[in-house]
Length: 157
Picture 1 (cartoon, rainbow, N blue to C red):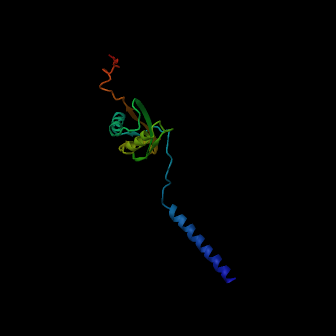
Picture 2 (cartoon, rainbow, N blue to C red):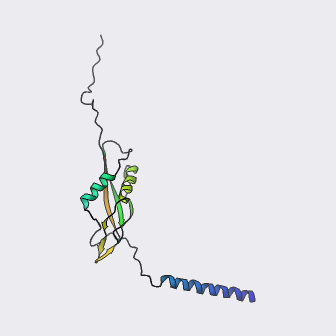
Picture 3 (cartoon, one colour):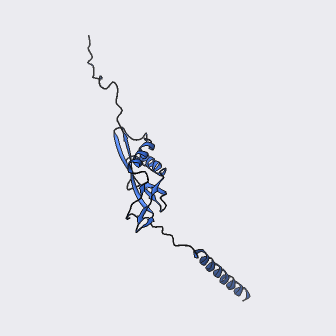
């Protein structure tokens, strides 16, 4: 009987300490909104403008060797911009392109971006998505002999 009483008392005291810890954790902290908005009043923008963003992506993106000659690809990357204008995540928007290496490179170069103005909803800055396109174009290498490389007829004497 004494053992059962001790066990019940221990469980009772443990439950009180757990309840007290929960109260201490939640006390004094504001409720944090973790919603990532897709529809906002004012979308997030790159501080230097859209043209500067595209030039920066084009300048820093490395051409993957696996991209076939004569191919042009657009890799849409969905950026997550927090309420402070900081890039927190970058993923391929929608399905992957025909070139997996291009997708990886698009994400790599996008994650290096800094300097965004956050989106606004009802006058407050909010966490939102911003989709940017990273373009890849691999031109066909021209053969210098191509203009003069007509098939020569073989003449047999």
